[in-house]
Length: 107
Image (cartoon, rainbow, N blue to C red; front, top):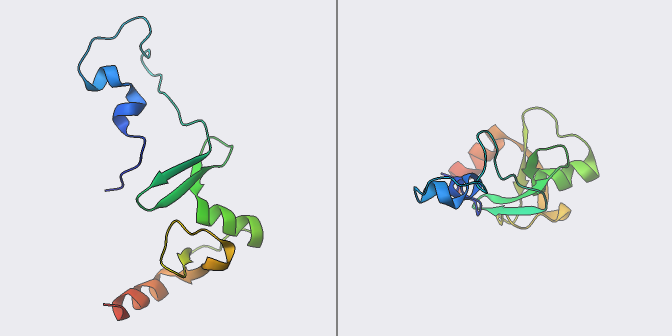
């Protein structure tokens, strides 16, 4: 399971997680405290705000910014194995089959 710094508990507001009743300053039905941008650090790397109401992995964002769109069926691979090192020189494209073979050989 992917554990991010911002949990569902925080998104819904702490008063709901603790079981306290809502008051006039609580979120109304359908409202959520949203992520406003910047970086979000998770177990599988950083996520960046794309400005279109979505987020994407920072490595993918950096790669697309320099090299254009990633072809279908390809994934971003961190050469040094550090998912937080999103330097463009550390990123390469692989197919899922190539990644599977690499992981199988490394055991």
